[in-house]
Structure formats: C-alpha cells, structure tokens
Length: 401
Image 1 (cartoon, helix red, strand yellow):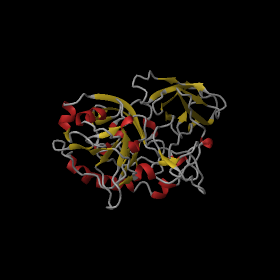
Image 2 (image 1 turned 90 degrees about the horizontal axis):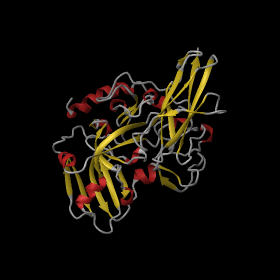
Image 3 (image 1 turned 120 degrees about the vertical axis):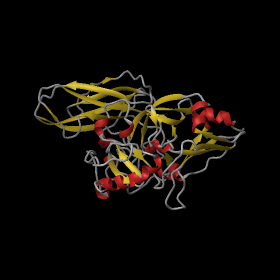
Image 4 (image 1 turned 90 degrees about the vertical axis):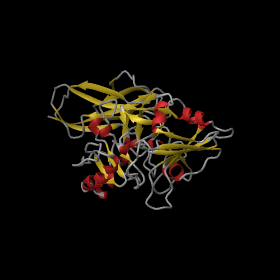
C-alpha cells in the first residue's frame, strides 16, 4: 500500500473498529483490566488490536503478546495525541531540520541519516505513562488503558549527539526542543514538543528509522522518531521534523501540565485535594506483566503449566521476578532469560508448576530490579489524578479443571 492511501483506508477500518468499544466501556474499568475485546478489523500495518479511537489512533496490545522479548511491529501499541497526522510522507523528500544555537543549520534527509552517520541499535521498552491506568480506583482521567500500552523493540538509527556534533552546538546552549509532525484540530492547541537537556544525551538516545529490522510502521512514527530508553513514551517524539537548540527552557503543555505527577515523595494525592506542585513523569518504574496464562484461561489439574511474561524498569536492570500462587503469602523465583538485549529491554520470565486444586487460581508476578525496587501490591498503589506510573503486582485469575 502506498502511504498516501494509508489514512484513506484507516478512516474506513478504524471507523468500523471504533464501533466495538464505546466511551463508557473504555472509561469505567478497574482491576481486573483485561475485559476489552480485540477489534474485528485492523489498521494498516497492524493486526487487529484493542481499539479506543481512530482519530487520533489509540491501539492497545493484547496481554497474550507479552511472552516474547521483542514485540512484533504489527502488534505494537499506538498512541497519538493530535488528530491531524500527515497522510503521506515522501521518504525521498523528507528532512529533519536542526536549527537555533548551532554553528551550522542542517536539513538532514533520510538518505544522509542512513549513510553519513554511524548507525547504532538499542533494544528498549516504549511504555505510555498511562499504561494500566484503568487499575486506579477511583478512575483517573485519561484513556483507560489495560496493560498493553507498552512494547519492546530493537531500534536502529543515529545518535542524537552525533547529529548535534555535526551542527556544532554554540556555547551557552543547554536545551533541545524536538517537534513532531502531528497537528491539532484547533489552532491554539500547542504542538507536541519534547524538551531535552543536553546532559540527557548519551549513546542510547537516538533518532530511529527502523524498528525490529523494518522501517518504522506509519502509526509508530514513520519515518523517524526519538528513542530515549528508560523514559516514558511521551518523550519519544514521532515523525520528527524539527530540532531547535536553545539556552532557555520553555514551559510546554504536554511536559509541564499534561504528563505530570505530584512533586512529593509518594507522587500521590487524593481526588478531593490535588497536590499543588507537580513534576513531569520521566524514568519508568519497575514492572512485570504475565502474558500466559490470561484471565479466564483453563488449566488442567496436576498437569504441567508454564507462566510466561516480561519484566522491565527504567534501566537499572531486572534482578528477579517472583511468582505467588497463594495470594502473596509465599513467593518463588521465576527463571529469567539471559538479558542479552540489554538493561533497557524486556527480560522474559517463566515459571513451571502443577495446579493442585480445582477451581479459581490467582497467579501473581512481581519484578524486583537491581536497586532493590519492587512492584507493590495493587492496594498499596498511591493515586494521582493523571493515572500515571501504575506498576502494581500483576495478577491473572485462571480456572483449574
């Protein structure tokens, strides 16, 4: 399919998909958070996923996908903020502008990006700050995601630092404003821009044009997107078209008003009394998700069963994942993969057991990272009005027959 035809088809297929999920269904869910249905139709370049909206596209990955270290591109979640996404981008004419406090302003074509700079790869988890929001009680504002607003991919591109070195950053410069191509329907709505301090740039922060060995899917940011491993996805700007270097931080809507949590030790507040001072969400906390079995699955009594899932954090690295079959009274270690994809990627885990009793069985998983941080019980999660950074111990309920 030509990319110019992409949204022509998407308007039809997504419109039909949206009929399967009403706003009420999406906005009133709590634990368990797997009561959404996969759409009967698919967006271009995607398999059928859980669909919240077609404009902007909001697609969630089903739980059962989270048994592999890398998430397939056609099952990778989608989160756009603005309804107006370019319907066609000519890769031969596309450029990224680099301007502001630089010695030499640049317009970098895709060909130059792929041929004139050192190419690097990094495996990293991309996760929406509102992932698992539907588990908060009372309901927090925003899209009522289940566990599937996340994915892990092998990203290929060019270090952002190398691009800035080519442009030559002037003395006194401290900040970068990275802008994407999506546009608001209302002209006064601000552009989606992420500001980065130059100190945040390391060898893992890249401008990526590939995802799992293929061009970025259109809905995941084709032709290029920002990759900042360990950080929530509001920072990973899609369809980058401009980078401006400056000496001043400019307050922005999405960073300073939308994607924020209370600036206190617990990052919490109450619905009746919001905490007055806030801070942007940034580094991801420790989390695990069970991919198999899923809620409602049937396991056979005294037969071998294998729990599988993924765990990750903001880059400290996962130390262990523990499984409980008795409501959290006792925990046993799951087996982790080798971790060869690096500290920003999923660590897959597995745990074998034989169900001993008929009836309902809760399977709980909690991850612990190398800093000793671990997932809390759901009842111990503190509330915030944006519904951000939920990382309660994951629970699936199956039936032993």
